[in-house]
Length: 134
Image (tube, rainbow, N blue to C red):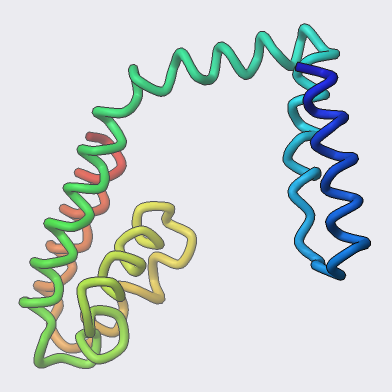
């Protein structure tokens, strides 16, 4: 493995000098050399790869709920100021709801709709609580 990585780096350097091609593939091989040398890093990577299948259903549920609330918000806010700013398309609503989930800019997402109708706050409270605690 180590010899293959070193050979790969050497070939990449030769190709880079011969063709003046600026993208270097050998940078990827450096991480494999690090995995080869360090047992601690190797065990960490193995443990991360083992936990991915266990947390995958939670991630799928999270993305499904954001898409569901995004579709709901796009339809509900289509004729409001918040619809033009935060929920103009499904992708914009996906990003806005992700920001809402992190509660980083919660007022920036919620207040334009809240200014139109105070009942819209129910949507934001329900979506934030179900996305954060599901």
